[in-house]
Amino acid sequence: MAAPLTSSAPTTAASATRSYAGPMVLMTTLFFLFGAVTNFNDVLMPYLKDVCQLTDLQSSAVQSAFFGAYFLMSLPAGRVLEKLGFKRGIVLGLLVMALGALLFVPAANSRTFGLFLLALGLLGAGVTLLQVAANPYVSVLGPARTAASRVSIVGVANGLGGTISPLIGGLILFGGSAVLKARLAQLPLEERLTQEAALVKPLYLGLAVFLAVLAVLFFLVRLPEIESIPADEEAAAAQAAAETGRRSALDFRHLALGVVAIFTYVGVEVGLGSFLIRYGESQNISQLSGFTQELVRGLSVATSWAAALFGNTPDPIDTSAGFTKAVGAVLVSSYWFGLMVGRIIGIPLLTRFDARKLLVGVCAAGTLFVLLSIFSHGETALWLVVLCGLCNSIIWPVVFPLAITGLGRFTKQGSSYLIMAIVGGAVIPPLMGLVATHGGGLRVAFVLPALCYAYLLYYAVSGYRVR
Image 1 (cartoon, rainbow, N blue to C red):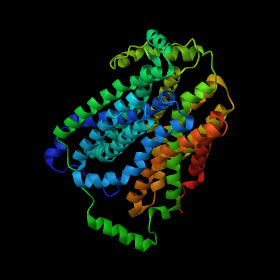
Image 2 (tube, one colour; image 1 turned 120 degrees about the vertical axis):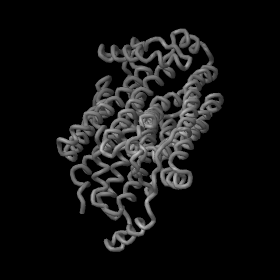
Image 3 (cartoon, rainbow, N blue to C red; image 1 turned 45 degrees about the vertical axis):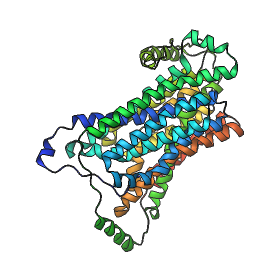
């Protein structure tokens, strides 16, 4: 993360009265894209598993390629922004994402998994650069007193994008019309896989065009300047380090444990979403409950217009065959919807109640839900995992401030370590895939998320204490 960078609000009278409605709309669109592109990987992973004929372990490289970019690009992104400035950095990030989206075309044409991973790595690198550049802008696009509300708005937009994209992606990649499915079923395996691989191309071509247009808009729009932290402040930080006897933020025990907490949180959040469809397939559900059938049909009809924009006109998802990947995409969307709703509800709850005690509650609930799911069967096992999305909603906004409490001059450094811990999303899913492929199947693999929640519970009860 760009630890040496911070934001400063405009100070002139003209700046104070200026309307930033246009730039704020663009920023909200960016955060919507962050959620949509990130959570679409939960549908892309089982899709590529089939198209490229992969194991669960191999398919989990989808998340490793994307989230690994957060770890590799966080610090370089800060240097890029120092050289180019924040506005040009946003434009560069959008163009890098557009290049990654375009790479999906040759990857789909050749069904080369390595090309898909390269494309995902570029998308992740672009998102990282945009995250580092865009977050400070949200705080300066208007009066300081309304900064929290702007952060909430872009957070909801992020959650909305993450909820919608798996649903639309499931319709396009796993839905389709009955005629299309019948035609594909009659083809030889290699030809059928080639035809199915082509389904992803309109999605990412459309994304590339949209990103390019957005880059042009950001290049033309007028944005306030964001200043770097003065060198003398960095010198003061070094002096403070010498006086306290601490050389690094990691010398603070609660920060070091907090880095592990963020690592496990992102890992469990991404891991559960990534393997939910495959977990559902392993349950061998031949008959869905009435509630699930109505939910799947209603959402598939409501979003079929979006799939039609990409040249695919799917029929409503068929629920008569029990659990399918298309049904699983709806459950993935429900998982992320729970996280979005939880964050909205959490805004007033975290101001009225002890945030740490709420963190204890959701971490204990997450541990319980995953363990109950492991020992359950059918839809019950799946809906227990979906409920974990609600539990995940307040973990980040509570753990992050707990971890940087009392760091003083080491706060920026500690924040950068916490952001780099997002690499947990690149590590936990492959570990789950490894266990699923070589260690006893998906039911055993879900013990890892339970252990992640257990560690988060430990941090909420004891690990957060400043010593």
